[in-house]
Amino acid sequence: MCDICTAHGGGKKWFEVKRHVEVKFAKEMGFEPWEKDHWQHVHQQYAQLAAQAGDAMADPVMAENVRKMIDNLIFQIHPLNKNVTFTFPQGHGAQVLTRQEIEGVIKLSGEPYLIECLCRKMINNASDRCCIPLGLHGETAEMFPSKQEKVERISVDEAIALIRKFNEQGRVHTLAGTPLPMAMAVCNCEVPNCIALRPRVDMGFNYIIRGHSVAKVDVDKCIGCKECLSRCQFGAITFQNATGRARIDMWKCYGCGLCAETCPEKAIELIDRESLPALKDWW
Amino acid sequence: MKNHYKIKWSNEKCTDAFNCAKCLEVCPEAVFAIYAPNREEGVAPEEYVISPAMQYFCNGCGACLAVCPNDALKIIPKS
Image (tube, rainbow over all chains, first blue to last red; front, top):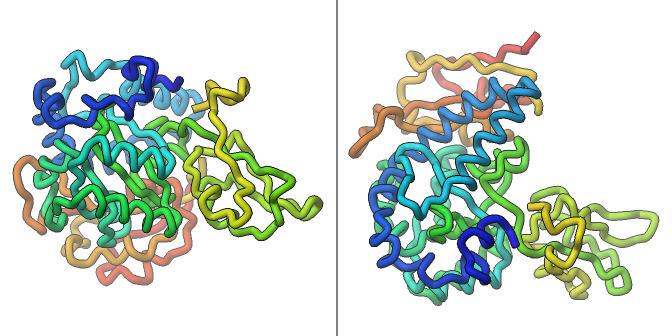
């Protein structure tokens, strides 16, 4: 079990719990001001924290302390006890999920919205409508700065069709908990222009934790077509000339499942992280 | 961690960040970010500024220098 599931799942995975996607429950817990605050200040937090963290990261001892501080902010404060302080990303984490898991979350929520991705707008000045906030997170998305286009309410079927399209394009699906464990936004990210994946992959901040599965190549089925190589955004897949097969570095794998979807021979299987003793604590 | 270059940014010279933002589009390392500081309710386009937030990933390629119409930035190698 990942830390979020252990703390909030009650035996299930955290994103399979119905109340974690319900607008009613989020409002009862008083998260409406938190959500508005998040939309208003997410840009400032990224730009200012990134600039400050950069100086600290140059020093190895400081870097370790900054990492610990950020882990504490994300995971060790229990957001459901209402002690969330505003204007700081307390309890805002995310997890990489497979397409099937994401579709399950969207069906469970039943209230998807569609907006422009705030990361790509902020970092690339590109208009990219791929962010699918759910429930309360979508309702409050109008609080976002004026660079935002309109917030659109879409149906569950439309949302799932979009997810499949993004999957074909090779985007990593992540589910953001704002705050954890409230499952409130489905992101379709690209490295490096994502404000959460960039700090995770390049700097080691655990804004995004690895998924519940890891990809493994079935050596008997792999024909060495190299289809999967370009799909991995984390540099986990390489082609081995000696054996003529793809090799997946499971320590680097985030479990997004993009390689498994594209394999024409179904030679990549997603196995449960818990079933591998070495990787079961590697999130 | 990379960290070979420092980007010296001038908000005085960068006068129309909201409509220009060309450096964001060309940067291969996604260094820049556009945002509005001190925002509470609503924000005017003039309040947006660009910040070289992830400047320690800068590889010194100079694509931003080539597109900036106002010479608002300098890339300085770290000693």
